Length: 262
Image (cartoon, rainbow, N blue to C red):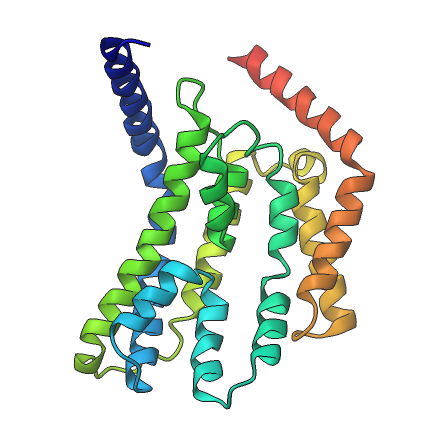
């Protein structure tokens, strides 16, 4: 390939990247709101416990899993126990196994971007990329990459703000962690409303969402609030695997109907 051809290819690649950025940015705004506030809380927690301002920023870049980062504060303050820290990290991050399995088809063919996409698959990024309806004229791999990158940068920015200005903040920050819960609720309801709210759609088009809801309720009732996450994911995984062909057939039918209506 000549130099001119290489330059042309680079320009086209840059154009695709910027188009994907413009297409995905709006969808990351709820995550931005939640991550910045929670990042600020995390940064404040770190510096008020005697850690240097740069440590929460570094852990936000390297660890990048909100719940584990908050636990890291107590781990660093306690006696040295690497085995306990490892087990805790594995248990907290176990849900990401299911995220990875769910994203196999979506991240297929993303090339070098796949490694970063895997690394940055947080709860919220998974929710956005899994439910994303990427426009046909937008590069899918760049869309997923920008969502992942923006979400991580929101978290890093929040951690930086909390670490630098934490000593000047005097109001009570208790309850800020509920931002994550409310953000998930908004993303879930937005996806639900997009597909409609009639009785038919509730029973058929929203089968996977209903499985998630009732599977989680069942696990919560049996295992309690401290241990229900992994069992609920196992229930969801098994049910979705067993009914995969039926769900895929229904999805194809909905796509045909929607295309015919357009």
